[in-house]
Length: 581
Image 1 (cartoon, helix red, strand yellow):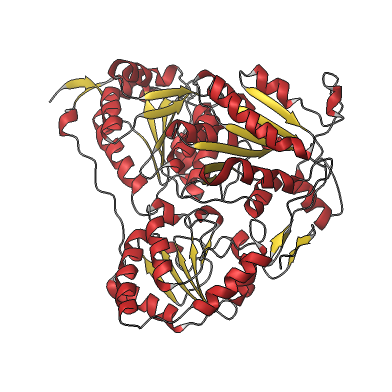
Image 2: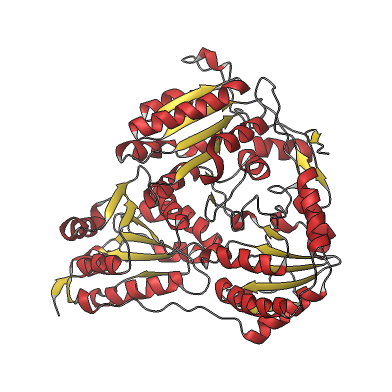
């Protein structure tokens, strides 16, 4: 055994658990950890401008590749409270993430010491587990347990709180003898898989709904393989978008009240059986349970036992890791196909493909000011099938889901359930840090962009280049649309003002180009639809030359209503429909 500071043991454990990257902000109460990282090496640290930003960077890092775990580090007191939004976002979307906070010495915790706060109690509702480590000898076991909990069952975030004296105390620890604990993963049985497939095979118009659990299980290949064997269409949820390529003949569109396709909703309403895998029946996907479930049977496969029946009782519930369940069903389906037992689905698949071909929304408008739909059409053309889109909330995100195309797993990175404004910039930086070769394209409305715009300086300092498309209508657009539709008001949602330093903005307010350039990045502003494509090409050139984030701001019309509704059978369309013959 070796004698070392407890915090040095923590850094050794991080490295043994595969951690090579961390995001954070140092402070007095966590400086022992920074000293250990400096002394031991092996962990690249990105200095955020705000601890919430660091937490979203860690989220983006985790969401990028299978097996990643983002790490966020902060000092005592407000650093931990700043992390709460990131922990909530990660918890809501089943994202493993480790947050580490410094803390006042244990002898001072009861004395209202400077920046001493009971952070573990504060974050309890938004973490899988949190612990203030009061004994130095407990630290290795706590870190070991943290990784097992984050990775096991339904993944999620953990916070470890480290009092200063605990970090500094010496303990016996041998890094060479450390081994990660095996995470728990429930597994479907063969009989369960066979029953699920029997129910599907007996239906006339079956669908598979693929949720974010497909990505957590790294099971996109298995999903597509099963769908192809069965010849059954797939409806990805927003969190499962990309689990099957958008241009795959069995990709039947997304369903929901906002982030959905006309053809996806129509296909869901025409179905009589749905097998959900790794999804949670979120209300923006289902609308009311009555409309969503009427006339169809359901199988629900999820890794979390209490998720089964939470929204509605399925006809069959199976608690299982998605990959395990899919692999079992693939084996059975292959046997059934070889014996001619599978039902012929060609007619049903043909119906779904015809809806996908014809039930489209327009995105070719030439209006000035620019209609946002045109921006997404140009993004599809410019960035192509390798683009990895990062977005969080608002009309920009809703319209993006309606008009963009995603072709690869983990190439739509979105804070789905929490949707915190400001998430996009730091999350995109986390994605870039996780995969330097990925074509990262972030998308924000002007308000989301302004929330944590300071984090662009991180991209400039550490050379984390990506393209950030900002659609600027100088409005809280989604809230304006909700106010207008439900309260007949337009109140406290306008961001427009006459900027005395930028009269050419014509009342749109904040000069994002000046702010972005002031943070060390590059920026382009576009006002004409035909200038969007050249701007995207120029952004790529600037990004390649300067290795910094590049913003392309498109000034769009101030009021655009995006298709949405309260039920999947009653979506209000606000734009002309493109009829395809």
